[in-house]
Length: 187
Image (cartoon, rainbow, N blue to C red):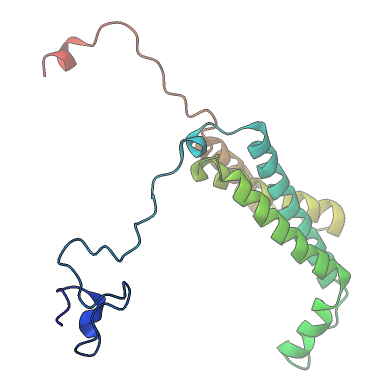
């Protein structure tokens, strides 16, 4: 019994045949013992426009991520310096409630972000998350007494401008009405 070329039984011991179908010999047809490939195109419902729930999920993802950053900063403040090595300094950090809740906020924010990406294009959602850098700076000013230098202020302005430029919320293209231009029609 010789297996058909390309059959996985070709690597088996001589005389075993195709074990996947429990038959003595594979046919030379299109490998009927293989499972069909799953559909790789997205279903039509995922190609629809984002709903209010998806935008809300994006806002919650950004807020949860920001809450996680603030809680991690609160958990890190007041810790003694790591004089006895990295591992000795990390254990007290992970036992603080602020750190545990902050990591939970990050995890839940990630889940909401995945929901938002179900319909919101990543080219829109990712720039929106950059707003968290601006809010982190504001929280640093208000809660932790951090300073804002002119260089940081310029960086924040560039982030805001970048979000506006990259986040094409409507992705609307101008409608063309009327006849085609003469130069384009002659080609």
